[in-house]
Image (tube, rainbow, N blue to C red; front, side, top):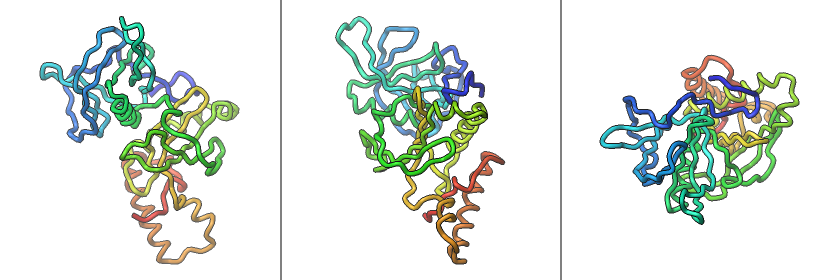
Length: 277
C-alpha cells in the first residue's frame, strides 16, 4: 500500500478507474444489510435505484441482469455523509453516502428515508475510512494520554440498536503528529495498528470499529474497556494471586494465538485485555 504523504494518515489511493468490478467474485453469504438505494456517480447524472447488499466481509454489490457488480470496501477508500444537490432539481438537496475510491472515482447512495441512509452509512464506515465525526459521536471525558495521542470517552449521537452506550476514541492531532521528528514512521505505525486490528476478531484483543480521518484529527473508534487494559492492571497491582495470574496468562495466550495468524511482530501488552468472558 502506498501513501503520498504522512498527513492525512489515510488517503484515497485505490487505483481503480471504475467504481464497480465486473469480474467473477465469490460472495460471502453473511449479509449485514440489503436495502433499496438510489445512486449517482462521477460519470453520470442519472439516478438509478436498485437493491444493494453489504456483507460481513465488506463486499458491497448488486445484481444487474443476473450479473454481479461488486466492490471490496477497504481503508484505501473513504466514506462521507454529505449533502448533494440533485441534478435538474433546483431545490432538492439530500444527504447521501459518498464512497470515494480515489480523486476521480466515487459514487453516491441514499434512501428517501434518511434513517435508512444513516444505518447503511454506519455499516459502510466499519470498512472504509470515515470522514464524519460530529454526526456520529460527542466527546465526553478524557480517559488518558500517550506519547502521540489522547483517549476520550465517546457517546453516539444517533445510537443504532446494535451500538454500545459508550465507546473510546483514540485521537491523533495533526499539529502534534507533525511536530515529531520521525513523522513518517509514526504515520506508518498508526496505519499498521489499524490494519492489524481490523483483521483480528478475539475477545482478548481490543476491537477497532471505525477509523475517522478529519482535516486536523485522526480518531480511532474502539470499544470502551470498563475494567481497563492489562497494562493498567499490572501498573496498579503490586502482587497478583496465582489463580488470577493463570487466568490472565491463558487469555494472553488466546489473544496471541489470534494475533499470530495475522502478523509476527508489532504487538504490545497494552493491546491485550484483562477481562474474562
